[in-house]
Amino acid sequence: MKQTIALIREGKVPHDKRVALTPAQCVFLEKMYPNVDFVIQPCEYRCIPDSEYIDAGLNVSENISGCDIFIGIKEVPKADLIPGKIYLFFSHTIKKQPHNKDLLKAILEKKIQLIDYECLVDEHDNRIIGFGRFAGIVGAYNTIRAYGLKYKKFKLKPAHECEHKTELEKELRKVKFDNIKILLTGGGRVTNGALEMLGFMKIRRITSYEFLKFSHSEPTYTQIHSSDYNAAADGQPWNKEHFYHHPEAYVSTFNKYASRCDILMHCAFWNPKAPVLFTKEEMKESNFKIRVIGDITCDINGSIPSTTKSTTIDSPYFEYDQQQMKIIDEMTEKTITTMAVDNLPCSLPRDASEAFGNELIEKVLPSLFLDRENDLISRASITLNGKLTERYQYLTDYVS
Image 1 (cartoon, rainbow, N blue to C red):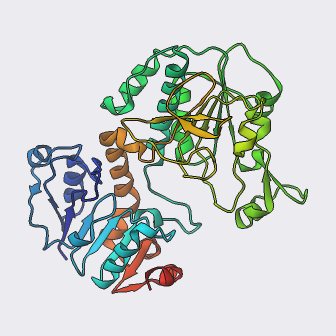
Image 2: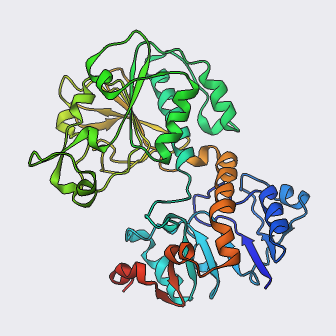
Image 3: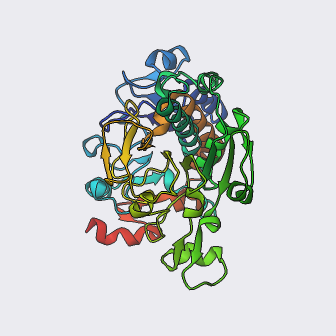
């Protein structure tokens, strides 16, 4: 059966420059699956211009109403949704986000099958696709750049002015650190992206014990996980499974790191029921030594309590005065410089798009094109035939 795939432009404002598939990837898929044809919806702000799709021999057309599957990145405006179709995008609805309630209602009313990238998980509920690696790459770069600006030690080009990741790496060759200590949290895709940058810079990796107990004559970093900075409130031994199911039963022990850390790159997933890393009151204490925070996860009023707003790609930093407990305008050595950009992969849209497309091709599209009723697609389908699927029945009150 012939299937026509629409690669849609991003209608959400501000416009996202990323695209789910590059021209070469579309051509590859048409050869791999002879029953699949692509139609590229024209877009003047996409990181890959229409001309590259045309030069690759692909059909670029405004008429996409006859397509079967619609592939995008961010939320699709309600007015652009075509009834009875299959859509793939990040809907940002599964946590009952208030601003997208009407979007999910419209999807149900139009009997659309919504496949959410965030819901593409394996049988153990591990996500299999996403932009996390590039969030970590750009987040780490921005954080290092902030340190250079703050102490006037080096100047790096803004990430969004670099065309590719290789240009970020070229910029990082300018960096000369003294014996600072960098701390990373987490162990997922985002953290791995940040580790990639630190590895490129050849900064020495040490254990968390060494981080806490020893000084070094060179820049160093360590990576810590939930068990390193949380403890059971009742004094019981650490239990990973119990922590993930009952995070409210734990307290933070992060302050032992805050007294030894110059730069924090926070990449760990945070459950709102879990303790914050530290409080605003603890940030006021004299032994709180962190001067630059890369809040790469960017949970507003979340795990980093001083992150009360997000920043932008063009203006990625704010200054937090810990004594006044508020954000101020002036960057000084006494303030805490914070990077809290909430769309980091958009700084390198071409690289991020290509990497995302490769994951789609490898892990998702074979299931979508050949066996749409398989477990992977079923788990990720929030809606089907005008109803919430069984896995997402908890959203019933959200859309009522």
